Length: 510
Image (cartoon, rainbow, N blue to C red):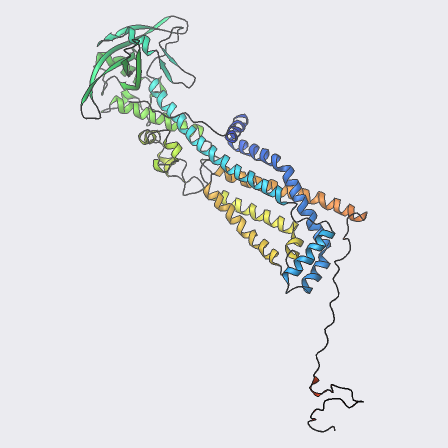
């Protein structure tokens, strides 16, 4: 059986590194998301404060200008251009700035987009990390059959990731030609403990062109193990060294039985109740089963180890079974369709290996990952945010346009924004939905707090006469229009001089 090769995941993004670091120091995915959200809010706090304070000041000033603006609305109800002109003159006179909140709002929007990309990138990274760790667990189940040499000059060791490392070149020099040579293995105290069996041979295999070629193989196993390590190597003609390639581990034979002397120890080891990790997915040892090949038994063990690793690392958040997948009954904690995975994921592992890793995760491939609860909460909190903003800017919405179009636009946004936020929840992960909910709650509290501060300052300024409506808009009196009269029956000249034009008098004066 071959090892599963999975490319080591890399973050490739400093924001992903920050999220990863926060999750690691907090030892909780949910707490890490909270910390990242608070961190982003702290970064945007100066811009938020300036923006919301500016909008609140404008709203209060607008409320003070309401009588004049309402008068202008009535006076220029049919002339929007002239209303805007008069309104801008009143704005200028009273220090009202329409653009004071624009730049901070744009910066906040940019950071929101950055947050989307950060969570999306981290979700992809975490997905690859899960399966990379699953591949390590899968391979370690294979390695468990190979005893480790703990001496100073060890031939068989493990690296920091738990991967098996063999000194191929040194073992090749000690290998028997077609037969096993015995090499002594030592424990960490330097005491002899077991035998390492190593041989080299050649095998003729079919190549891709349909012909055949002869390959050099080195095979290594330990006397108490149940697997054999094989690797292809080529001799370097220039310096006489060996170049090693493909790693594979195989069972001693296709069907281990106690009757085969060379496999007696392997069967004993496999069937040993002391080695719990050698139980298959049904909790049985090899010696308890009939008509099963050693390869199938070991494959089952490896796949079970892979599944257990996913369940160990995948932390459920409340009702959401995988926080890096959408909170939806249409999604599942583990995606069964390899082609549906992101391209960067597919570049990390083959489809065959992926299917082997998820083979024992049948429940996770079909169960719902969530129930749209986060999407509903996101929409609800977004509606509440719009409601608070509409209350804070009521005067602006009602008076910035002569026909009240601003108020109608605000009402439309109260419904459109929640729908848009819900769509974001459907498109992105549950982790990002949590970010949006928490971010919106913080924004609501920030808005209420800023409004309270600005309102108090505004009242003090009004009490001292520092902030009052400075005069009224001067409206030039319109020239009175001459009343139209019917000149048909009026004299047009001087009656005294008799120069008037005579008119035909119809009827008689009564």
